[in-house]
Image 1 (tube, rainbow, N blue to C red):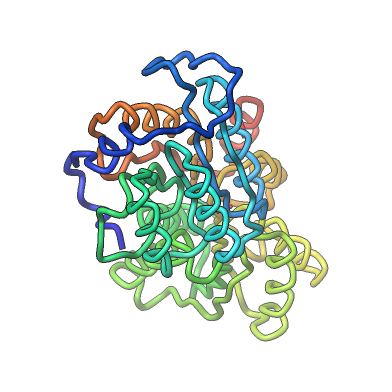
Image 2: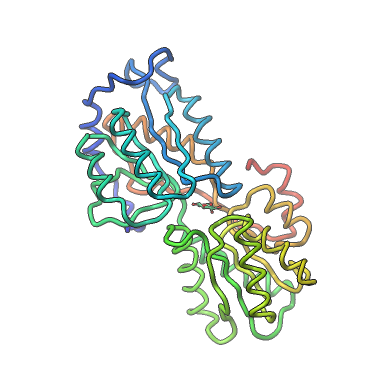
Length: 335
Ligand code: GYE
């Protein structure tokens, strides 16, 4: 996996080489873009994970509008959460000789072959949002995205506050709704949370059930219903995203329990619907994960095209929110 602690500035060798590669097939007829850098419009091939969540829709909108703003020719495809679709999209971008490929990998493993093809074609690859696991770090230039392990730690720390505020006494029996199996945010959000739990709450906190809800509302609803059947004594839900928490809330209510009271809920993302649920008292705290990566991605694309250097991991800045901040924050949420 990408060494997420490696902040060394890396030389963009592949990018420099790709800068020389011809892009004869790209669409004509637009300006060269506000960010300058050559007379030809940059063609960017972007393979999106899917449209599984509110976070993802905001991320897609951000990428599309930032590409437009930068004057790039964007080739966009939605992989519907399937790795094989992403691999074919990347292969088609290679065949079309795009200038730069960016993608948000649905899972962490299984990318080496296609990334080697991109490297052989001298097309630089930028990861956005999620990382990959590879021994060959020359296969991508940089990752533009969040620190998911830290989000997991922050979720555990904010749960401490939530429990305090609720005056909770006794054992903390946690149900965890995981993101897509094998996806970086699912692996790392679980890991960061467990790290704090094991170090600081070994005696009083326990994850009694954990399963994937695939980052969707339907998944969250269905899995939570099963959790409540098998473990009616759950008193905390840690959901790896707001959409699964919102789905779970429906099942909690259907079981005659009060979300945010009988079952305290912490989730990740901070999308508008998450804030609405929080302002209604149904989610207790949210760890923000910012999807508005488009402008940063376009800047990196330009730098890479110009043969410049970029950091190995360009991290997103984020905050945490407790329920009592929800109403005030809601009107200014951008996604
Ligand atoms: O948290 C979730 C989405 O990769 C950070 O993917 C992203 C996650 C996000 O489906 O809502």
